Amino acid sequence: MSKTLVYIAILLVLGFGIYYFIIRSSGSPYSASEAGFTVKDTGAIGKLFLVAGNGESILAERTDSGWMVNKQYHALPSALNLVFRTLATQSALYPVTKAAYNNVIKGLAGDAIKVELYGRDGKKMKVIYVGGTSVNNTGTNMLLEGASTPYVVQVPGFTGYLTSRYTTTLSDWRDRTIFNMPANEIKSVSVQYPDKPINSFEISRENGKLEIKGDPEITKNLDTPNMHRANLFLGYFTNINCEGYLNGLPDNDTTIGKAPKQSSIDLVGMHGQHQHVDVYWMALNKRSKNVTAADADVPDDYDADRLYAVTNNFKDTVMIQRFVFGRIFRKCFEFFQYEAPHPAKK
Image (cartoon, rainbow, N blue to C red):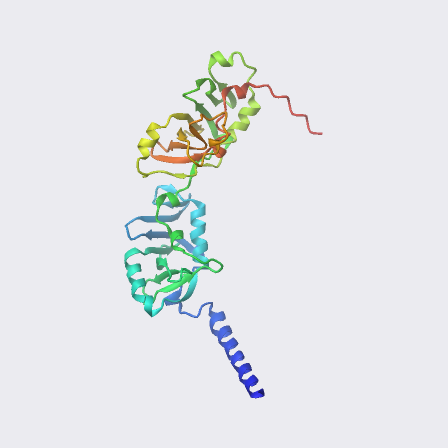
């Protein structure tokens, strides 16, 4: 009995020694050339190029004005952060089994997303082929360029599919900013309601002074313009984002063409910047909250939470939330309502 205990103790010591000196010290039991899927210093990355099997591609580059996508658009920070977090934490669990090897290689050859990573100096860091889910659905099949063996890769604490994080869909990568202009840089704002022109208005700045314009027949009977509210309103045009892009969806033009216009918004900056947005009502659907409870500001046939918008010189169709844009959808008379002065601070 005592000899058995001695043998067990020796085996435990040997096992701990193997773990500590080989696995723990190296961070992985596999060679970096075959299974080096982790990029600890993502700050060293200067460019990513992702290509899917269908030819769809994304080029994300670090520039003086921030990360750009396909040399045209600012990158969506959350998309970049997700890729960087994945690269920094993903690691090889084990090589794919012999039984699965041929199928995995075939899948990687046909459907893998090729992820090329370049340093700030432009030199290639590594190339990873990101495939489908593993046989037991606990990880993702990946292969390093130049390696002979694919591995099942996983992010610690996350059991599932990593391929979707390396999306090559442009709308997943594009920044969703519609308006982002500080109040002191705004020259004018116009909000026009084609179905209710009585509510339309324009706020402009000339020689440092604000002016509020509306239908003369309406404003002549209202109180003195409320400049406090006008100043607050100009502050609403920072970090106003859309929910997502709808470009390329089937029948998109037909859907928007049939929708009545809710408003047109024009934002002009001191340096000539101009953003024009046309907003359209979205038809009522099963998820619309106002199916059961009417909204006084929304016609009964249309969704109270979401609307369509066409922006960026009519190039992009997007979905916006009324929760985000609601502060912009003001009415002319609101800028002429009397407001008691705020008490002075003691």
